[in-house]
Picture 1: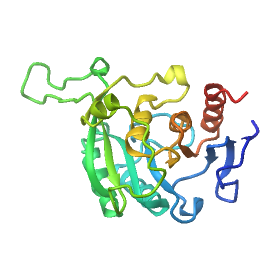
Picture 2: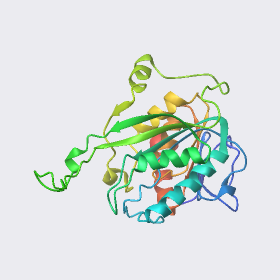
Picture 3: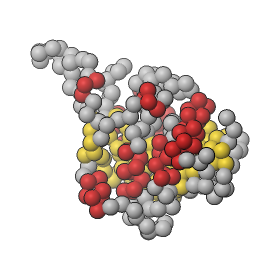
Amino acid sequence: MSVVQRENLIPFQSDAHKKLWFHDKNIALFQADCLNRETFEGELFDLIVTSPPYNVGIAYHSNNDELNYESYLAFSRQWLRNCYHWSLPEARLLLNVPLDKNKGGHHSVGADITTLAQQVGWRYHSTIVWNEGNISRRTAWGSWLSASAPHVIAPVELILVLYKDSWKKLRGSKISDISKDEFMTWTNGIWTFNGESKKRIGHPAPFPRELPRRCIKLFSYVDDLVLDPFCGSGTTLLEAQLNQRRAIGLELDEAYCKLAAQRLVEAIGLF
């Protein structure tokens, strides 16, 4: 599939570190590795909205999702450091991660990622609890009806709200397009909406569109530049485009670049 390119309003092109797959007037998709610091130069982004691999054995094409936990934390530290380096001083990071993990050993993933983010420079603001309501997926209770070894499973994920140097935004268009009802609902730190069907999208771990939509409208101004370093099926780019933001996505796997580009073409109605 060739690059889709219309108006060159985002000043980034293919280079030795990233291959351009899709380019519309406000958005660009690159096949690139967010672990590579040379992917971008300088401070560019106003907002990052992303969900990295959870390291739970999902069969991605180009990513090992079964690292030992120490290696997973090293991976997390590297991309968090790079995103910090690429972000403007007033940038926010909205980071969707699991609360915890018990496959391969019990780990407090949300707490550990929060600590790592702060160690590389990000500052903590708050945590949104995303209630997916997926309790029906549960398959294990540990010791059934016994105090011997019960398993406690919370059907929620986290959205960590982090920022770089200053929480208050003094730069940008100053144009917010959020309604009163949206603001009142979304500033409540428990968000309830369903996840997305991997079968319908064709990606093993797709974002529901509601997640980046809320993050983009609540935490950025119109025309801000948004980054998703784990772009996957392109949902963050789609919502950025539909909500008058500029956006760049990075995706390591060629098959998912093709999927994201096709979704963008179809949803935005480019052709």
